[in-house]
Image (cartoon, rainbow, N blue to C red; front, side):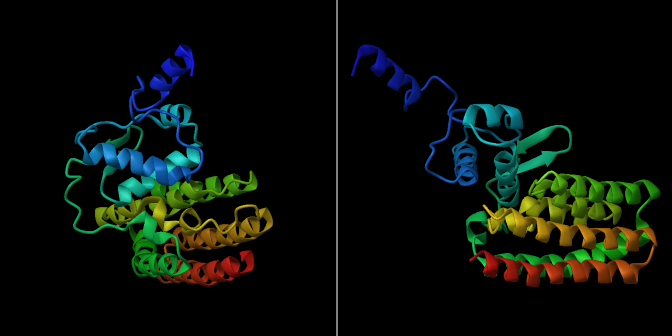
Length: 259
């Protein structure tokens, strides 16, 4: 090895002059998992102290060589583990009590269909009532925000996007409409993990299946929007129940079709 090559190896290896967090990822591992592991390790080791702001999405995308979707999925997983919190418009921050995690959902445990269905059943129990309460309490502005979130989801899937963030944002808008911080906190805790296609990549390389699945979700979202807009707790509760129960059945069917 030449002197120049050795110098380059020192720069890019364990003696890298780049911050440990902001360096390219190895090409052989799943992107999201490695981002999660890297950030979690730095939090646990104290290199990222409580209250520290994580690098921006763009900074992590550029330095690690990953997509925006990977970064967002990683932040959602870290939030579900109680390691980070997010503030709208401000970014992601290390949780002030990251070492205390009385309950957490391990993202690595969500790689099976059974575990995804368990999350859907948990959501059904909570989000049915959230939709009903939102139909009664949401302000006109909050109902408009729910409808807007549904439209953003529609635009995302029309562009061929997996629309994980947009899907989460729709359900989050309903939680906000309850005017009950506990519903909001529940969804913040789960983060993007509530969206099954984040945990199981059933549709990789199968665009037609993904489109059909997302179009079904789009229609169900609209029924929920309509019910909340009508101020009907009964219709809102039933529309959300149908959405999540159908999702459970539909996801199992599509997962089987995808082989």
